[in-house]
Each structure stands twice: as C-alpha cells, then as structure tokens.
Image (cartoon, rainbow, N blue to C red):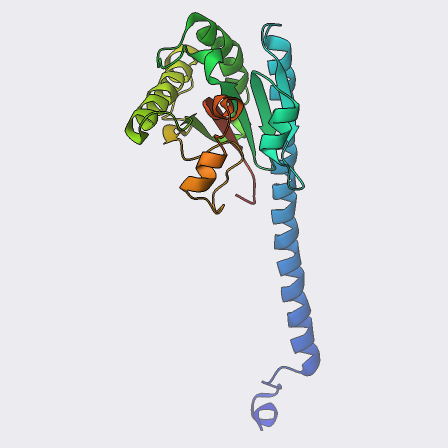
Length: 234
C-alpha cells in the first residue's frame, strides 16, 4: 500500500475531489461575472454615447432640417417608420450601433457628388459630435446608397463618390484620424434599400418593390454614417 510505504495516502479522497471541483466552478463563475460586468459597462457606455449624440445633433442642427430618432427593436419596420415620420435626418439606434441617415438632398445636389455648402454646414455640426465620443466607438462606416434609376455602375460610382466626400470631410475637416479610429467608405448602390439587413432574403424583384414609388426612391437615395460602439457582443 502506498500509505504504508510513504506514510500518506497518495490517492485523493472524495472530499478532496469535491473541494477541487467547487474551486474550479467558483473560478469559472468569477471569470464569467467579470466578463458580463465588462459587457454591461460597454453597453451602458454605448447607450450614454447614443443619447449624447442624439441630443447634441437635435440641438445642433437648425430648424431647416427635421431630425427623427428611431429605436430599432422588437422587429421595427424601418421603411414603415420612415413613412410615418418623414425627416431629413434619421438617427436609428440598435444595441451596438447607431446610424445617422441623411437624405441625399441634405448633403448633395441631384446627381452630384460634391458636398454643397449646406451639406458641409450640417457635417460640421454632426462630425465634431461624433469625434467627441470616439472613446466609446470602435468603427465608423460611411455608406452610400442609391435608388434603381440608371445603370448599376452609375449608381455604385455615384454612391461611392458621395460616401468618399463625407469620409474625407470627417477626416480632413473634422479631424477623425482613420489611423487611430477605424473608418471606412463604401457603396451599396441600389442593393441595400431602407430596411434591408445582412442575411435578409432579397432579389431584383424585391429591390424593385422597395423602389416602387418616387417617395421610396427618394428615401433610398441616402448617405449613412454607421457608428459601432464598444460592445462585448460584437
């Protein structure tokens, strides 16, 4: 027997095993609680930044433009909500992101990709508000969107040039440095009408339906600044 030869029992008792198991469980619970607490802190910080940006944009944009805030939760029909609450600028909140949507005519003249003076003015108000919340932001995407008029190449290029114009304004005029704060510009052309999300089942027929009226097409011609916040779920 090992106990007889060495003076102790080499094999751990059942009690020792149970104590070890309980210790491991406690360590796991401690780590998980810390992760949940960090995630909760990120969510709280994101929510605070969202609220600050909402309030400051509403207060900063003059009376020429109507701003509407939408909470994208519980299966919100974004297209329907925009129909019911028409605006020049929409601020759409999700759990980990915030989308600032500008009607194309707010920033650009028809079929133009150069920011008009009024567009520069509104970006000069909105841009610094975003810049003041960069501590809670992990990524900024500038997205260009179009309706179904004209060919795909034209729509993609126009939306891309418009997105780049906003990107450059945020970079060079507002001072958001992409080397420090991840920022991109992209074009979806006609292929992401209002309300479409990644993974949605779409085809050309559905895109046509999303552009069935002049009002729907005007809504799809837009620039979006999508702000992604620090969030443990992302």
